[in-house]
Length: 83
Image (cartoon, rainbow, N blue to C red; front, side):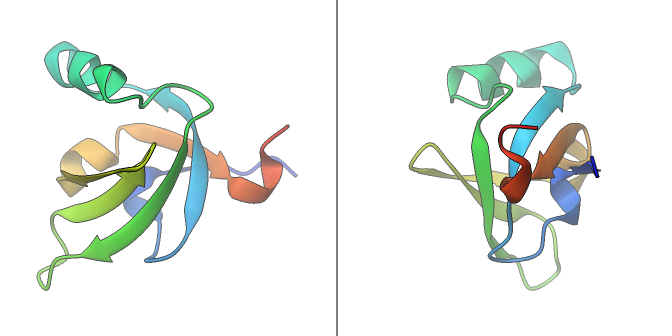
């Protein structure tokens, strides 16, 4: 079954693979520069006490993203890597 969800829906410790990034162009370009492209594995490492922002592990770097931006990044589950 193909299930997708957005980055903001990951719980701490959960991972997924990027399917698409639909943020505003400047942020999309910056995220691509950091390696956040389709096929990249992303893991939610921590949430701030208020829940926003969250820290994500992306290609060995820990990146904080606001939930509004994370909702624009569509993922598929880590176990569906080849799907």
